[in-house]
Image (tube, rainbow, N blue to C red; front, side, top):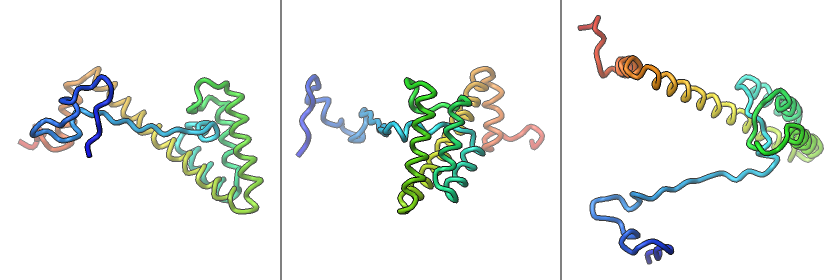
Length: 162
């Protein structure tokens, strides 16, 4: 049973054309919905995030407590509309929840996952910064970057080799 086209779509647009993939022309976007505590995790430099993970692993909530102060130092979060102090207190609340529930192991597990999220966010931030830098270089000197890239992947032999 095939789904009916939505309002405003024609039946011809709902059917895939011959020779094309059934999903061609369809844009699917998945966006993770984060709660306020999860969205308050700051984007820190990678070494700081690893230290916070280490602290959270051995002393539940300590790494989250330290990460709260990175917000005061200017670390960004996924809560741009909230004031810096509000995000700071959300991180302090998360640290307290982790400390208080560590007795029944829930807080310890939450603390470790929180630290892993910090490292993942830091890694994604550093990857996006590398991509932005590459695009900036490509926009200013596209010819020299493409030559270097082609030599790097081995498509064009270096002039010294020929």
